[in-house]
Length: 264
Image 1 (cartoon, one colour):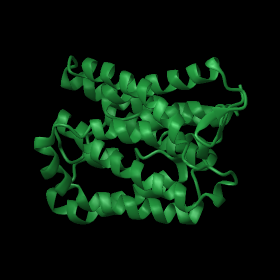
Image 2 (cartoon, one colour; image 1 turned 180 degrees about the vertical axis):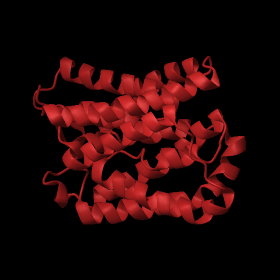
Image 3 (cartoon, helix red, strand yellow; image 1 turned 60 degrees about the vertical axis):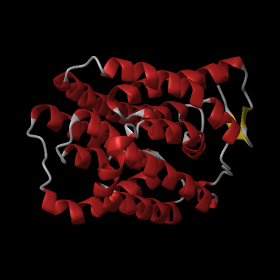
């Protein structure tokens, strides 16, 4: 199935089947995000890239990713203190993403995607079997911006903003709901920075990729439906099970990213 983004819609080989396939991708990705607090861009990028260019997939992700991340910011009562604590990291993320977009262009996938996949698998295996990484409060002031900068560069290269942001957030010792909210803050910042990076460096992608607002907005609906289902399931999970689900999801995503490139 050949599907290209033209202007604000899906064309060339589109039809009911193409829209259903894209909707199913965002339903699945939204469900994983609702369950463990991450995974929508990684799953969607991996699956959408089966029939479209990575830069086009990244552009299609902007509205669903931004809105679901904003939804994840709740509850508002705890948002401001946590946002202040993570401010340095977010500043680094914006700087790293914009610098990476100008230097490397739009997400190009391939080799950088394989490296990211391997890193995800290694981190997930260590998290399931090893001792959790812990960041002392005194180190957050300088380590947060450094982690943000690195996350921004990875985002510019791959369109995925899990590493090293998620390991760092887990190392802060946050409770389950606070961790999910912190990931919402980080991912919202990364999504907005990626959107800005896509607009700053269109020529580097080799393909015009003005943000397909209409198509991205339509695909928000299955993403929200999946996220609602995932959140409902998360509330029923014990903390230990949630932690295993989180690391298992990272391992599965990383494995898929490596295997997809290997079989291409």
